[in-house]
Amino acid sequence: MSQLVIQGSQWGDEGKGKITDYFAQQADMVVRSQGGNNAGHSIVYNNHRYALKLVPSGIFNPNTINVIANGTVVNLEALKGELDLLESQGITKYQLVISDRANILMPYHIDLDGAKEANLGQAKIGTTKKGIGPCYTSKAERIGLRMGDLLEDEYLKDHLKSILPIINIELKSYNLKEYSFDEVYSYLKKYAEIFKDKITNTSILINKYIKENKKVLFEGAQGAMLCLDHGTYPYVTSSSPLANGVSLNSGVACYLLDKVLGVAKAYTTRVGEGPFPSELFDKNADLLREKGHEYGTVTKRPRRIGYLDCVVLNYVKNITGMQHLALMLVDVLSVLDELKICVSYSLDGKTIDYVPSNLYAYNRCKPNYITLPTFKEDISNCKSYDELPTNCKKYIEAIEEITGLKVSIISVGPDRNQTIVREKLF
Image 1 (cartoon, rainbow, N blue to C red):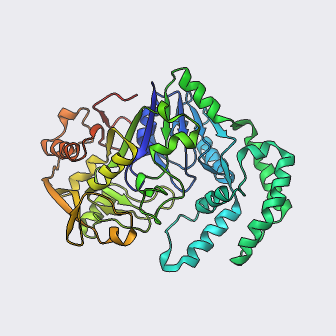
Image 2 (cartoon, helix red, strand yellow):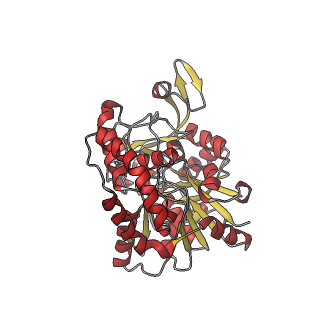
Image 3 (spheres, rainbow, N blue to C red):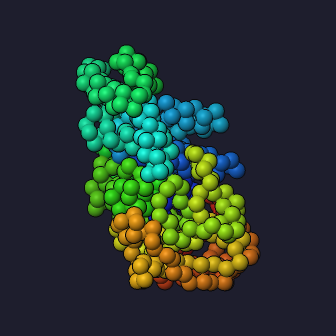
């Protein structure tokens, strides 16, 4: 079998884009299974950094089919803008298809996102205000629009007439602009003409490739700890980035997904609100942030920084069954004078090795660390595990011992060729 799921194993921004791009060079298909244009992948290709939002990371390989699957929410304007930008930068030979079951993120979803965040005040989630949550809400309320609707004009008209009054009631409650039928219909018809040739039943296409034993790579957005069900609720995203959700979000039987590669930074970062037990507030946070360029791909917000949290990695391993780990930005650790790994928490005087479900309880958790010697060598040119400094290898081996996961990939720099592969996965 030749299916590989790549899963973020922290709070997002782990470096999934680079790893997906690395494997996409070998893949026949790359599938983006959930999320929207609120989360970006930063990929260095030909010494140029690209910020991908909706477009799958296989876009740079002209031989790879890129699939935006049914679990995603598609901002039509943003997708068109992203493709235009890529084409202006010379990325013109690509293959892209979009699921006819993917929900469309509308301008009114963005309006509602901003209004809801503002009304939450101190309890705000810290969303990117891109409309992702309200779009998934429309999907769950069954008043959403789907990409396939763009191909059925009479249905599109009837459905719009049914849902717009409901949408406008909510907009009015926040004193927001209401939308007319003609305005929304014209908007959708404009993008229907642009994307009509890319809309298809992607589940059929993915399954066809799997049956033909072609290599299919599944990528998600965000990280496991932002899962709607298993993350640090309510400070989570509006879908599930877990490998478990790939089957549902792309229309593939779960038994066909045979390998799960978790992606984690060699330290921990988080964007937005919510618990973060190993978070740092000292000079070490600043050193890691600057060395690792820890600013949001989409929002440019500075990321919160902390030591590596293996309680989180073990939790994600248990709920997803990931077997392998890609350890990213290992080279960044050289700015530290010592290395620390969180191995358990203290909660109200008790030592625990799990992630509490309750927000208040998780906020009370204090990290328990082991301390390891650092390394100061530049490892960005290392091509094999044996070339790494002794203290770097001790750090990696400690992670393997604590988690029981094989660190199969080690990233020592942002470029594709700055990748040490210890075990062939694809």
